[in-house]
Length: 370
Image 1 (tube, rainbow, N blue to C red):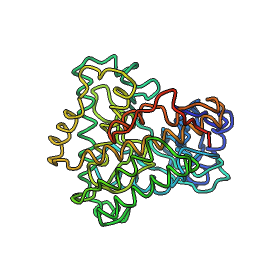
Image 2: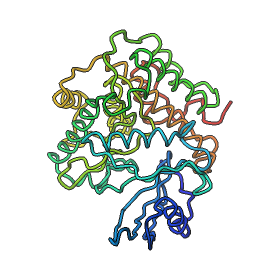
Image 3: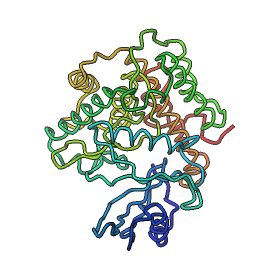
């Protein structure tokens, strides 16, 4: 799923060059080259790829960079806190060994590009695609089974290392509630509000019972909170030719929570790209139990309450797909009666987890109906 970028590629290079000259007053001969605006950047933020070169203290310098830009119009999320995202990335890039691109600049003046943005270092590597899913086509499917397994192990090991970050030591202890129970309360409250916003208050045959299930089965033993990436999956990582992770990307949903929150999301998204789409698990990729075992080996942490966090992952993803469906209908990518907001791989899995009927193409509820 992707919506078109709205940035004008013919003028954005000059705009960035003028802006950078104000940010680098000691630079001379500053110029932006090869500014590229991908036709689509997903449904969260827009992206600009560029290189800038300049002279400083008699030395020629060059930097490849990426702009992450909040949508100028309606977006996937209720709000975009790019300052928070940049703060987390900067802390991790400067105070840990994790492969997080350094943040070079941040800008909240919307007159520059039409929305707040930040600029980060460009990272080399290949990303497993979502469209089409990397479980069906693309470079990941060109790997042999052992290589696909190595990619998944590297992804899960990187996630385990992220969860080992000392929040206080990197200056992120205030990122969310200090009490794990309060952090979970805040997370569920957020997604309940998100669902109401994304669906305009309409009933949903899977999300409504799933949220009730979360209320009825809330675990008491949550364990310690950690830095929660929020969108933990191979599709938000760049991989080198040796299949090591070169960059962790997309921090819009970052917060704090138990380790299981990210781990369940990682497992759920792989299920989404396989079970949810009636696609077999590619040879070499781990089953859910195998993925959990890989994480346990890497982290030394024995997960608890994973059934609960799998349902939470399903609620989050199904709510995001519901919002995406509304955006795609508004953009006329889908017809007004398209059932995507209810009938999709995310709800298919979630319905099974909370024991409600799986929506079909004949579902009475269609996106946009009241």
